[in-house]
Length: 472
Image (tube, rainbow, N blue to C red; front, side, top):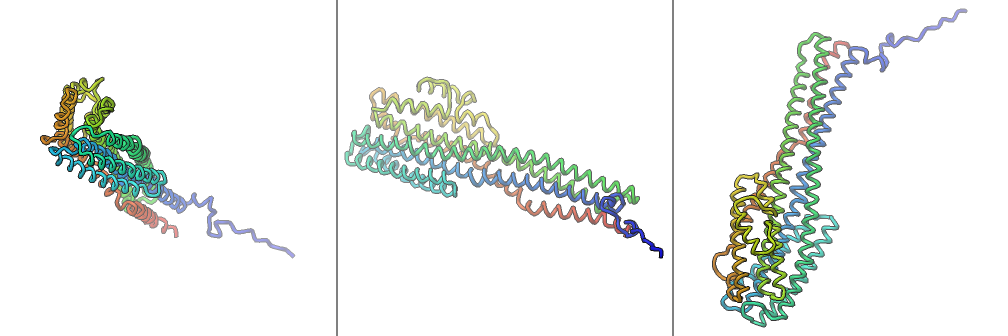
């Protein structure tokens, strides 16, 4: 008996091709090219999505998180310093009938600044969210501010009971004020400044990291986009040669869509990087510096009152005034007389440093030069007034010096402060505009990108489907 063995059928006879051999067939090659194109689309989608997320994170931190916290703490610093300034003015005036209206105005402004400080502190605490360090600092500041207000209230009550003439108050009042102002300068204000520094550092680090990520991501979008275009053109060229079709409409649409998507994405990322730069350098940095300049200017202005209020510390307050003035506008000067002269000579140019030197060397906004000129000329008048006050006080005209400081007439410091606020608002407007434009530019991209990827993949599949159907 003969046994006949039937050889196993070959893959070709079974009608199937092993996976390792399928790519050698025409349908296998077409499917492989389509899969490569689809993967390239997903790579472009991933790279662009991650870069857009970096831009959105940068705008969130700078424009809606740490940035506003810095502005709030800057307002807090000014309100706190002005509280102490108004307290010094009120104590310097005492019960002088001729300056009673000025004393009442100082007390009203003291209460206003106290309310603003509490509001700014609460806002900063709210913006800090769950940050334990920020919350602890805010609570410590509330406690210190409470102690300051108690000392200030005692000093005002004791001063009112003494009903002294304009000038240095009784020793008991001076002692209470020294405790209050030392608490403000050595405890409350440093805590406020630390809040500003912490959030300012966060803004700077976020800006550097996210803007760099956006610029690098833009390069990767270009590279992956070019890769996708090369793949799509290669698929069309391959199909045109093999099937003698001049143009594949769906693949042509996919190629054009890819080109549009890459160009629009690159333009968007370039715009977002520019808006981050504008918000940080033209807006945030200047607002922070000018807010500090305003607070220090106000504190220096109060040192004039302290100079007249507390003769025992007059030399100290005079040196502190010079140090603060040099921080605002630095010119080479070893004493106040030399400083006054240098300020008169430097106004109109840019040969100075300090906060105003930085501003003068970074003119980027329409109207900024004119606004800065008003600030500098106002600052020059403030320094001229300070020179007059100190000359009168040195010559023994204490009452005349107080009248020059607090009496009715032209409010040069008020005009200077208004000009400084206007310049700060100019930069604040640039900041708000850049953040708003950045947010608007990114709106909808969390849907646009995946939607575009789906459309491109559908077009790719639609482009190769007719060719594959020829092998069925």
